[in-house]
Image 1 (cartoon, rainbow, N blue to C red):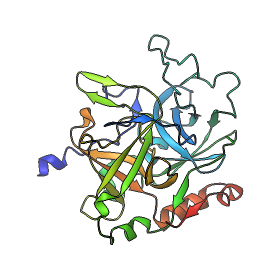
Image 2 (cartoon, helix red, strand yellow):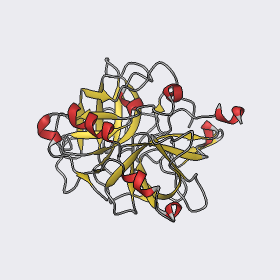
Image 3 (cartoon, helix red, strand yellow):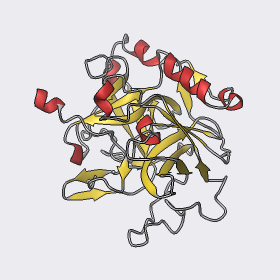
Length: 303
């Protein structure tokens, strides 16, 4: 058992240029046109060099929620970000040129898209995420929440909503909790193994089922969802910070963020663990970190 625990994976979904081959929602994903506020986030160092990518959700026109390990220096100095909200934000990526000629990912916002479907940022925050060791160094409360405040507002008809404090705790007391549906969304790989990877760089979504809320690995800080396969979806490299919605495809209520999984790192299999946002201390940190005018616009809902 101890040997298995050592296989705790590096945060799922961060896709760094220096990482080993590894990638979107796995299992049985479909194109996500339901959540236009979910974006592909590219991060850069102080010299403007592309470093890594994650996924994230707009809570207001300028406040984007993602994972803490995405906004910190976990993969080296991280100073700025650019967010693409097109469903196929990087689908036309050309490995020869290192750019998607349609959207400009990851080097620029395509002409006419700045402030419409693309935005920049130099305001990155994290919920005191531990950067000096693996994500589980402060396990199980790894504080894996981050914020990106955009320079240009992205005006949409809807944004992500935060589930109120204790939403999942109430779920734990209900019968049939394992039948509860969650929806994952992100821009990571759909498949990764030592010999092959599939990286569509599109916003995809899939549903998953609850495994448990209370264990030594979750302990009230994370939620464990079913692994990939068996008609269930999971997350992979590039999905970090992507939302876990409570309910089916039409839900926009966020209860957790894609973070890590237990299993062989290189194949994106095993159960997924997602850091909970339905905790008052997390909600308070978000509201206290963003500009006051934006905090008042964040929707927090009781389910």
